[in-house]
Image 1 (cartoon, rainbow over the protein chains, first blue to last red):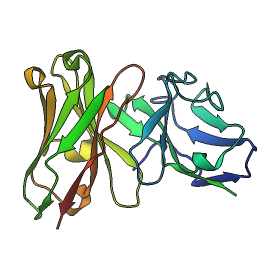
Image 2: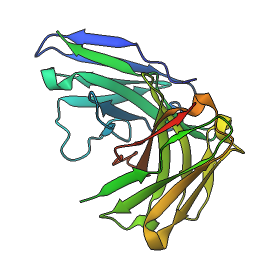
Image 3: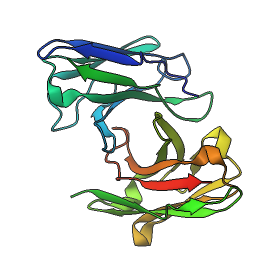
Length: 110
Length: 115
């Protein structure tokens, strides 16, 4: 059972900005870095954001991350059809001494 | 090119055992933590286990005592020994390189079906 809560879905038209929230607690997001992963249909997950807001090389700057207190957000600006897929937040959790993932958000481009 | 390739997934009866392997290439394997993450059919991601560079291990609560993670640096490989398998363990199992920069990259996964 995921301890990081995300909205099940988000959508937008091409070019729009979409934001996905990730709600946690003091034992995870509140005291550790947040990561975001993108999983396109039929593929393995891919790291999108690390260290709350940093992008690995090759990830477009349309993707941005932020964190405040026990919550984090992923924003996708200039939405494109190839952005359709599932997005997961993740963090280390002291209460379970393990990594935890969010419930996942399915992004649809209308 | 950094690459991870999983193997060992199979169909197994409840109570049975399996050993998954992950072969790494393209980086200095011994200097990275490694992790197993699973995804049940139609469900989200679930971290299962991790092993540090010193061999320290970490497990999801529901697999503690049943699963064991190990690594063999000389072979650039790490493993997940799964015992007492349950239907709830059915999933696609991914291996991933761990770092302060997150799980990156991921393998393509190996399917474990308990039925």
